[in-house]
Picture 1: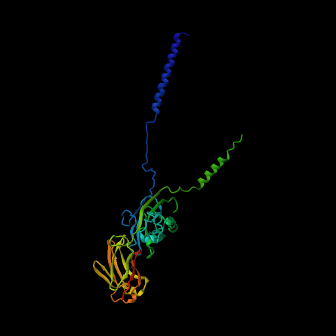
Picture 2: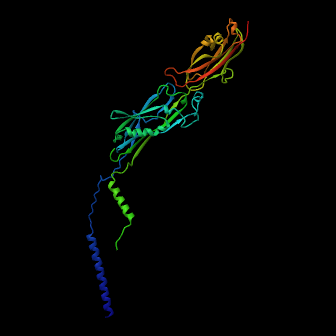
Amino acid sequence: MSIINKNFISSNLVRNLFMIIGVAAVGLASTQALFRDVEQSQQGVFVVGTLDMSVEEPNGQVAESIVVNNVGESSNIQGGKTWVVRNVGSLPGRLNFGVDNIRNIENGCNEPEALVDVTCSSPGVGEGELGQNIQTQVTLTKNNTATQVILATLATDQAGVYKEQWIANVSNRKIPPGGSVEVTFAWQTDNYAFGNEVQSDSVMFDVVYELEQITGGV
Amino acid sequence: MKNERPSWFKLIFFGLMVLLATARFTDADFLDREDIFDNVFQALTLDFSNLNTANLTEKSLLFNIFGLQPSGFTLESVRIKQQAELGFTYQVVVEQTIGNPALCQALQLRVMRDWQVLYEGSLMGFNYSSSLASDDTWQDLVFMLSLPAQAPPDLANQTCGFNMYVTTLSGEQGSPFTDQEVLTSQVQTGSWL
């Protein structure tokens, strides 16, 4: 075969190859989808519920601590404080109540106290005698029905008793979203239930409310 | 060749099946806690002292007389001083401790405060009450003890020991706190014709 024939064959091959590529390119371009549609649902969201409570005074003011600083002025003491506990979240919750961190403090002794009290440290945390003489009563008011649920003193070892009695005596601790209950903490001593042994003593404690999420059942 | 799986694999698989079969709901995930801190009950204090009116030191001895004669007398004073937060009402009474009761009955007492006579009569009949408010600080009492001029000779060379009790009073609904201070005294008569 001559050189002329070889050049002729190879030029035909190249031309055919370009033709195939060109046809393929046109075909691909013409068959590609030109229409597109996207639908977006605006309501398809995941919602996480909220668990939140408020503890307020009955008049809506921020809950204040109990402060009784005149023990000994008269032969006894008595009083009470009411808190409104409201579920302000979107999930139902189970209410727990407790009194924690009870500290009976001696605060030293003056002469009359020292005659009857052998624990006279200052501050003498745990040595005070005041708390054991103060009887407290917790009442739960729900749907206009008041129920006494806790009876305990403010002695140091009584901290766990509050939560135990609350759980044992409150049959339905559920508060639905938007619901509320009233908790009244009352205190009293008998006439002359205490004497010089409590002079200058103090008892301090924390009141604790917990609202826990309900996951099936109450 | 038979493919034998190890036993731990079977155990894990079985446990997973049991867990999935019994699982219902997850535990509570959310918890809200509200604390009302530092609730406090605080007891007040009640205390007083008997002080020497001259140097304000503690005073426990009031009269200590030797050789008292008819128409003889002596003066003593005491400051009842508030030492705490609570005001109080106090009462002063006298009780014989030792000696001749006739001599104790014969002794006369005059009590003054701010130069006003509060009491004048027999020592053993003295019974006085007063109050110190919480913002009062003290009250000064002046005592004059005397033997009447007509004291009989059988009271010569006799002794009368007595205590003066200063005690806070509670009253029906008053403070359960109390305090008591004691002033001791001893009187010995001389001899006379």
